[in-house]
Image (cartoon, rainbow, N blue to C red; front, top):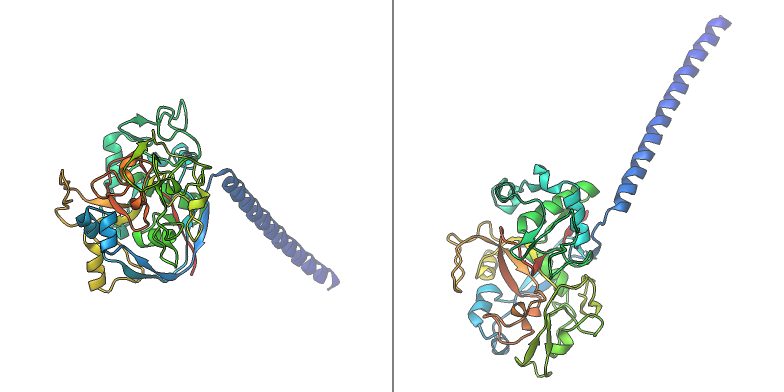
Length: 382
């Protein structure tokens, strides 16, 4: 009897020891996986983000006697930005502190992001054919960013050696299309286990204006041209690519050979929430389709809470400015370093006014530009 009991206890002990050993192996494996994941993330250049809290703000801009004086092409203002209206964001999120840089985007390229179909598959929420971007990439043989002025040769230099506009590791990535920005967000989500995406127009403008609905990211005061635009370290608010000959906000401006600057070079122009370069440096891609006179429609349909862009651009999509482009476009927000993006275009009579947070533009999905980049939005649990 004692022998049988001893044998039974021995078997039980062996079973328990095996269970403990198995549990130990599982625990060690989990610790190793966590440490490995942490090591990988530590090596990645993950875009920094700042928290944005829920709230209500004024989106858009009214056409008044003051704004007509500032923006001489009032039709464009009504077409793009009017009227000012109250919008509520009911959820928290995190917005990129800075625009995505060459260094950050290079990791997507080096990781095979251009060869991975899953990153390019467009979610139905974006109201576009799922393979549109992937087919465009294949037809164009696209393997890295580039635009008509240059191509990115990763074998020679990872930061656009031949690009005169943005050739530093910490300057914004440019020459990308909407599809490439979209694919980058999917890759970043996969690599980090978080959810990153392009912001909607409302999310972008709220991150720029804050709960006080500032006209400019830094406040409401209409500063002189040299106070708004200048070189890094000069106390200027933004990289606008110009230097004034006089502080009269007139059109006597000397055009600099504008280029992008490293992100965060203008801390004086930081937004209420802590986002840098929401005005100047590069214009930024958003998730939404562009449509003119869209705000009145949103208001009429009472879609001013967590609003998103139109399901479809108007067919045919016609911009009432020569050459009357006919092609669906995604919305871009903010302004770039270029002179024509800060007022020397047919939309604005004053050189610095398009630095306003409400400024909207459109960009075709297939086209890269030396003036356009993007920043990411990170979703958080609410």
